Length: 135
Image 1: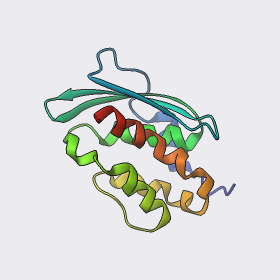
Image 2: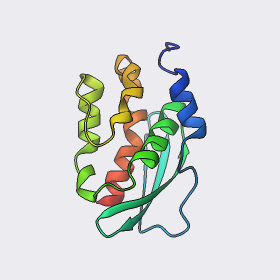
Image 3: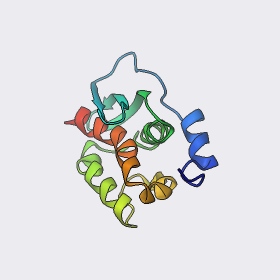
Image 4: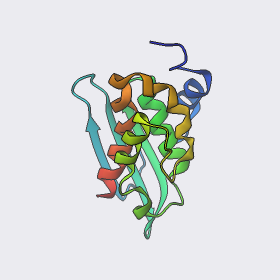
């Protein structure tokens, strides 16, 4: 793997990013896993009407998965449920091109993962869990 894939900003986000741990009172929860690599992500959401109020996450997975879950927890609060409806598909498209999906502009951190198709699901797993929780 390229050192560019695990650059400093991504490592810092995975280590220090917000939302680590489960929420005590979640309004919605979902767990998804990737049986090919063993990554497993649980996302807890606290909702305030149709808006995400808080995100908690528990990740058993690689650095990319940890960083993606932290990005969700950092940027999702305040957004409406509808803002995330098609985000996993948009993220998969971004990893194959250069078109950043809304609403999470921090996704540019994952640009180096585009070169490693086998790592795309590591990045998308937390977003899939969020979409499932909002289901």
